[in-house]
Length: 492
Image (cartoon, rainbow, N blue to C red; front, side, top):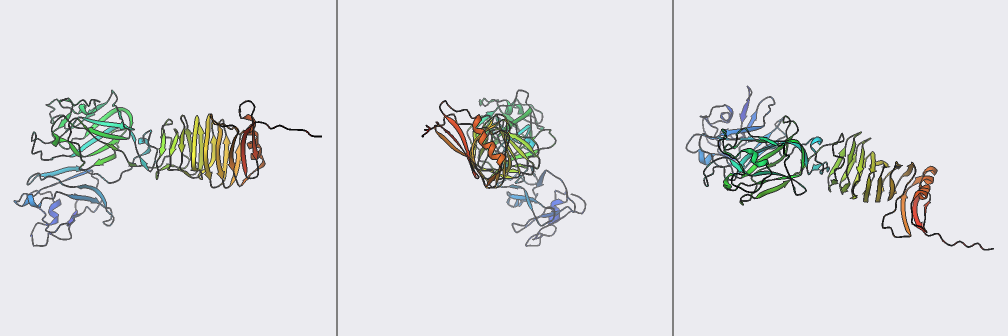
């Protein structure tokens, strides 16, 4: 601790006179003295005077005869910059007694919430406010506790063991690339690596359950670092238990990711998980649920099927240009000023959510459907090369539609002015029942050029023999009709 650090507690040292058993003893570096507090709870507040950086902590049990009955088995650690607002950094419960005068920990910090930069977002997880998947080259898996930390049964040994760290996407296994390597500072069975249970076993894609197919570490804090050789995407993970010794099953751990082994990001923390006692069996899987940030660059793969879940928001920063795959879900796309979202609609999907803000939406390379969608944040709708927009939507405001190689067979109710740029092109459903009628747009107003463009689009529509396409344009609507021409009689 820095010079000048103080330690205080509301009840100091306790409800009785315990002499020198004061709070300051908890931070003085002397293991032969102690802090003794009679009441519980009695939070110990440590003021370092200046901010300090740390990622783990540990404490020591006392050495007196009463230690077993007084040693904490549950606690929480909080941090603050002002002594008023506190944030939980870690919490533990049901921690086994390790003996008198023994170290407890170290424990890595496990904050309740964590941010993940967009470059780690996976191809299937563009839900923004919370992410369901990640992309990374490096993993770091750190075990904090096992089913029985004292290991009083089975082989009576310490440490942990498991057979495979399984990555998954959409419920299917994600196999480790052939170039995957691992490193654990504690070695295999022990720091000397004298037994044939090396950490490489947990990334070998083998879950057969054979006796040697496991990693056994006899040191508890032994983070496993996995280098997959290239970025890999996954949205869940699980653990395969070893073929024996249930006491060594991990029950508390932290999973982190990185692209450079320097900056690590926590993606999941687990404490006292209920792990199956079956041997060579899958524990989990645990789906990822990570707070995200705002997209400023094109970070989601262009072929990413993108679902925005209910309550989630895909945030595009000002000026961001983002391309995603087929768009679905009922969540929100928030477009900051000048932001543009392009949908690479290589397979049909239905979006039922909302666009907010002030940006552009483009559809290309296939059919993108809308169903009850609100396009209020789309000021410019672009039908790009090969793109077809279908379905129904509303728009509260003015909407500009640009035909740039794409086609339209939707129905949008615009409360403001509608304007059209480019040559309007319409498309019929493949299974359209003829005669066919579709209200293309309703609007509060449309200038003459827009009305002419809407009407002219009927001329380019391919229809079956014996049918004619027309677009009836009024001051407030444009309606497409495909019907057989009627019989005209000339009477004199």
